[in-house]
Length: 182
Ligand code: PRP
Image (tube, rainbow, N blue to C red; front, side, top):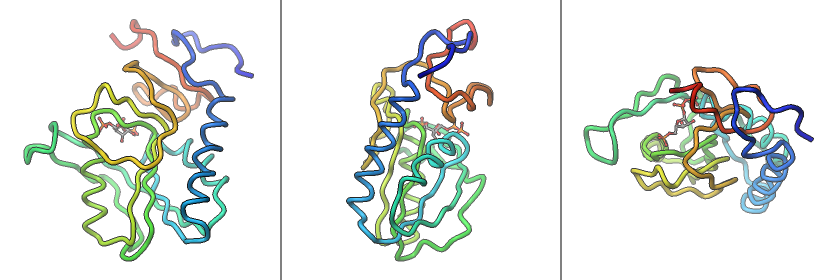
C-alpha cells in the first residue's frame, strides 16, 4: 500500500495500513468507553493534528474540538521544570469530559504538566490518548489511557511528526536516517 519510501528515511516503522488499523482500534475503545457522552477533544499542536483528524472522523459521540500548543522545559516533576502554553483553549472545560490527543510521548514532561494544568480547571474527566509511546525515554511517569503503538527509541517522522518542521505530510511513520539530523 505504501508508495516509495522517502529518501531521507532508513525504514518505515508504521505503514499506512497499520496506522489505519491503529486508529480504528483506538476509536472503537473510545466509542465504547464514552458511549453517547459528549467529549472535548484537545488537539495538541502541531504534531497530533493528522492523527486527530483521522480519529475524529471515527468517533460517534458528540465531539467538540479544541486546540492547545505547549512546550516543556526542564526534566522530571521538579519545580525547575515548567510548561509554556503558547496557545490555550477557547472553551471552558469545567465539568466536561476531556480527551487530550498527542502524537508521541517521549520524556513524558509535556503531558504530565499539561494534564496537571487541565485537571486544575475541574473537568468531569481527563484522559490522554497518544498514537505513539516511547517508554525507553520516559523521565516523568504519565497516566495514559489510550496508546496506539509502543515504539523503540528511534527518531521517527511522518503522519504529523516532524524534524525541523518537515516530513509531517508523509502518510506513514518512518525512521529518519542519522546523517539527516546529525
Ligand atoms: C512533541 C509531542 C509532545 C512532546 C512529547 O511535540 O507532540 O507534545 O513533544 O515530548 P515529551 O514527552 O518529551 O515531553 P513537539 O514539541 O515536538 O512539537 P510539535 O508537536 O509541534 O512537533
